[in-house]
Image (cartoon, rainbow, N blue to C red; front, side):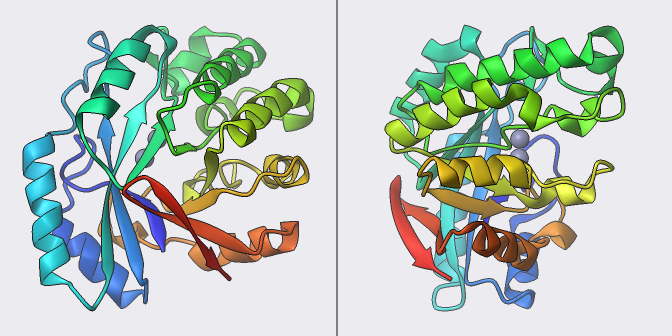
Amino acid sequence: MDYHIHSMFSEDSNTPTNEIVSSAINRGLSQICFTEHKDLDVFYKGTDYYKDRNYSIEIERLKDKYKGTIEIRKGVEVDFQEGTIPLFEDFLNKYSFDFVIASVHVLRHEFVDDNFFRKNDPDKSYKEYLEQVLSLSKRDSYDVAGHIDYAKRFGSEFLEFNPEKYRDMLIEILGNIIRNKKGIELNTGGWRHSHGESYPSEYILKLYRDMGGEIITIGSDAHIAGHVGFSIKRAIKLLEKIGFDGVYAFKNRMPQKILF
Ligand SMILES: [Zn+2]
Ligand SMILES: [Zn+2]
């Protein structure tokens, strides 16, 4: 399965949905979930990533076309910011999905990229990022928290992200997620990035498991067809090693466990 995929319905991808599905079938995947971007911050340029009606029609078309070959689900990756919580809740009440990832990408209306780290202290930025994830972890409207240590993607160049240092915050975040019966994702995209770690790292995955964390999805964060299914086997191996015995799929927002 691959539960984190972007296509041309996300502004940062040009990949036709058919190419995504063909690639998934070629790689032997049995199920994929499209998770297009939805951004709610009007100060941040990519506001209109997601267009519901066309997206829903396209997913229905794909389901029909590939019936019996591959299971296709309709998801979304909603950007989470404390300042847009009412919009976040309204959006998720208004539209229906199989699966909702909520992710932090933006702090103080700026994308958390290398430019951000050039201007801001890396240690403080890591804390600020995790504070947003903490705020997200208290909500009830998402299914999994996306790439929870994503700040290291661009921050690692300035200061290595050491999860041990933020352990107390991570325990609070993961505790909320577990209590609220939500999950996290293992995002394999990090294995393509220069720091070479998954999102989150093994340390955090282990902490989640040790605390009783159970709901976890695996996704490649593909924006091109060639990344669909990226390192899914490696992810399963890692989760098995840590003590997970399966991963989760979602249908109509209901978690379904699939044993390894
Ligand atoms: Zn993301
Ligand atoms: Zn994504």
